[in-house]
Image 1 (spheres, rainbow, N blue to C red):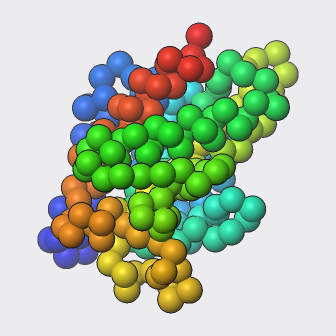
Image 2 (cartoon, rainbow, N blue to C red):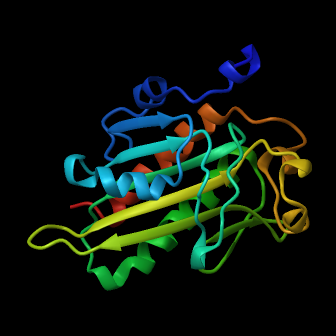
Length: 205
């Protein structure tokens, strides 16, 4: 790995140290490569507390809505999933999708002063092009709060050439919108802080 790549790696301990006594982010993991962060967190759920956040520097089988593939090039974006146990019925999972999409959209606006919009149910756009997406999956649990996995993907430092040709007129990254590279770690901390605050307000007991 080159010095530039090392500098651009997410560091779990440093992210966690900046979150304080959070629910979301009480445990942070960063893996270099994985198939899908949602699938991995689901496998870990039985032995993990609510608020676990798993980042992948690269996903090889990232999923979007309706089974669409989510392109997740190495160290170009934020690809992560959160383990949640929200105090809601399983048929209210759309509330979680709306919460995650609105919070990610708000984080982009606050951090970069970029105008964003939400294309229902789960896409965040800049100038009509997708910059982020959300995939929430819930599982019923007997005699305990239902389990939810909130998967979030944010295009951060891709150039146009990093996207497949068929997506280049429909996708955008923060770097493309800003005309400069973004500190992924700093933005990851900002997003997780915002997600934790809004989750506590809406879903935590």
